[in-house]
Length: 413
Ligand SMILES: [Zn+2]
Image: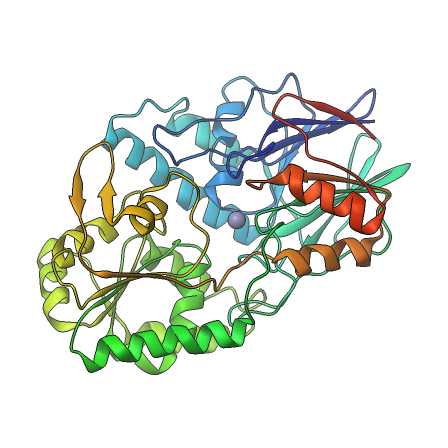
């Protein structure tokens, strides 16, 4: 069998991996890399038999409609992934058009994709050719899944994965022994501080802003992170303005009782926060609410930029990032240089800039724990900035064969 890397080889973004035997080709994810602009897509696959989507984030799902221009093979995913991916993909089409970037698919391609979608539950067995397939809760965002493929050998693809419980979700489930592990490596070379401690520091930082009567702007990913932050800030709900795609996503997610640790609590928080819908309300929000939770998480678009413009000269206000920032994203560049820059504008930001890692990804020890639990003979590292270093660490530290392929490479398994 073979694993071919079409995207996410030695990079974070545009995940796309083909696993095949001599008859059947399965594609795992087909994402887009949104940052840096303009968006880029993975290499195009040759004819496939099916697609399995690990989760809704655009770096895993955003290129899928391209495949449905020509073909009509089934696309397997959980129901939550289906709702959230459709929401995000439709939004990406709107945003790209607004920004003047060409998009290699149309609304009709999205429609054909949704018609060919097959919904599956966690742990349910389904067959594609000789591959027997199963999804495992990945603990990353609602509906996210690790993908187990059995065809003589057992192959497990983590997608994006979190081993620890978060406020929103329980930590991941894993299969027992596998032969080949295809693992994400976002934090492959980084150990994070204890989550509890980071949450405490985050709350201290918010209290500090409140005490000074200033504003905390918290840019968030609409799916997953927005809800996690709202749960952490439960006691501050009436001080929070919620804006951007984070609103629709939060509303949808709050009804996924089966996926969440406490959907009821999330629904109650959403009743207490202030939903910002119009430009007028945005101006008002800056005067009335000290905490603004809004997409986009890396400041690549959305109302977050509007609020940033509004507070840029307030040296006592804060922009607080709460997760991973992709290299060359406006958020990462802002932290490095105090300058906010996109293709459309550039300005200096005087606010305090902070970053907490309340991540939905496993850190280095979490990823090593996964290896320890599934005991693979062969590890393929993808979706990281220094995947080669991570792979070398696995070989030297654990004595397991590990490799970090580039895009376009084929690995025999
Ligand atoms: Zn993700």
